[in-house]
Amino acid sequence: MAYVRENCTFTVYYDAAGVMTMAEVVCHIQASEDGLSEVEAVAEYISDRSPGVVDIVPILGCRLQSLKDNPDRPGHVTAKLALPAPLAEGMRHSYAYQIIVKLEERAAPYFFHELTIPTEVLGFTLCFDTAFEPNVVWSFAGMPAMKLPGHPRAPLPISDDGIYQRDFHQRYKGRML
Image 1 (cartoon, rainbow, N blue to C red):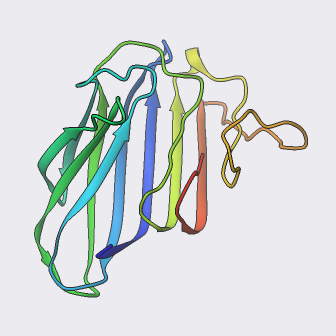
Image 2: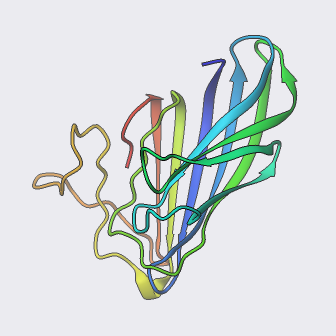
């Protein structure tokens, strides 16, 4: 890996029907060697694994170089995002992109994110339309397998306006939420 992701935030939006309409992703990186010219973005929508359901759209500090559906993992796309100019070792850069879901099907009853790049600070904000607020939110961070947590795992707070927010402060790689 030619860079370290120092900070990355995901803001995910759900509409009144429970459809995940989009996510905004903002990343701050530092090159760990000379010549870093691209980064990778991945996305998956498990409620519908058809090709073309998920799109990755650059919005700041990058441009789309390629977008491919993974034939071995339906519903999973990988984008190569080109940086405006190659970075020298130690240089920092910020970029942002949107994950667009082109579908009106209700989302699966869980949000899952597994890191493939070590990240110092990872932030999640899940924004639910108040007509579609979940009854409860749990974190699966650090669990060896994703399963509904039993006691004593406490539910996580959702604000009155339907927002759940959590930051993970470690050099994470693996299952987060």
